[in-house]
Amino acid sequence: MALAVASAVLLALGMLDIISLLSHAPLPDQRLRNRAQLMVQSLVRGHSATSLGLLAPADRTPESFTRGAYRFFDHDGVTLPALQAPIEQALAALVPDGHRAFVAHDVSVLNFSGHQRKEDLIPVGNDRTWGYELYQALVISEDGRPLGAAVTELRNSAGILSSQSDRILPFSDHLEQTERAVDAVEKLLPNRSLVHLCDREFDDLALLRHLGDRKYVIRCQHLTRGVTVHGEQRPLWQQLQRVKLVEVGEVVRRVDRKQERYQLWVGDTAVNLCGRALRGVGNKKRKPEKGVPLRMRVVVSELRRAGHPPLRWVLLTNLPDSAKDIVAAYLLRWRVEIRHPWCVLSRVSYVGQAHRDPVDQPGVVLGSVLRRASGRLGRAIRTVESEPP
Image (cartoon, rainbow, N blue to C red; front, side, top):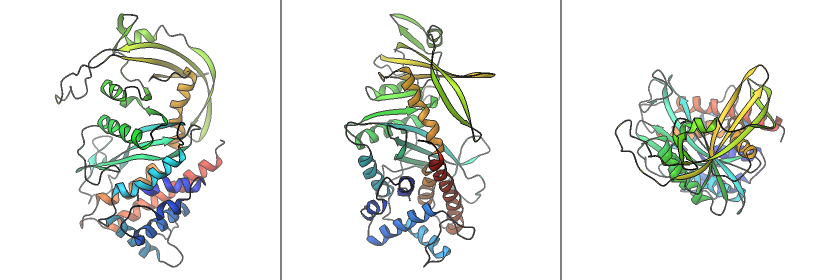
């Protein structure tokens, strides 16, 4: 039920006619479209202590409703691209031509270590944790409101279940996933000013070259890499020591259900990256690759608070915006983590698609996933409603 990934929250925010979108989803027949509508409505309402994850309508028992949901997931005609289609239509409507939107790329770990009978789990997090990896490219509006996942992919032992393909894709690495997602989002939302936001695990020279002229803000991880400034080569960390920071305002950060205020200090410099891309060199899958030099800005930011060590970020970008605005764009990731329940909800469809196997107990597995997902959705919606704009 990948369509619930975005539509449930969009419905809660009063932003779209979800029922209309689902009624035109490219599913095999109207019966399946009706089932999709009921499931989305149920997820928005939440669940009860006696429900098996989804809160059934008044004319159905919880058990029959949950079984119907599993039959929906297990239908051969219910493909992930078909479920993604309503989200793509919604995103195209929510981001008008000529407007800016942000795209946050991230990987989440789904811990299913307690499910001993699942045969498609992969090691995640550490040697003792087993589950799945969920990758998403989340579209965010100009004012920082999450709109929906343009790309969703779940990795299991067979490969990648993708919203962009009706077959399982091979897994290489998360950087290749991001390159594919960047191309897909740019194709989905042409004539928009898209800015791709990535954490430091995506600091990769090959990815930066793949982005090219497309706009991005990526947290820097490799501070020892060589850069060229006015024809002189030096390590990036050495160049950053010359950057003067100035105070530009205040940032409110939520920590352990409370808000903490920090003073924001920023500065920036311009550098050229001229080295070889080293992706895959360590495991001998590839050789270092030459590429065109990249001209970019490096924005340094510090969040300072009396009695605490500063929180320091180094951001790589090709945006012409002020250093303060670039930091603000990166900070959108904080709000996304709080207001991103479909990151949890999407496991419902993708794990459901992954387990067409008689070894599993569908009602138990699905019920467990849906109970957690619907509970998280309710808490997330309450968070959205209580937050100031």
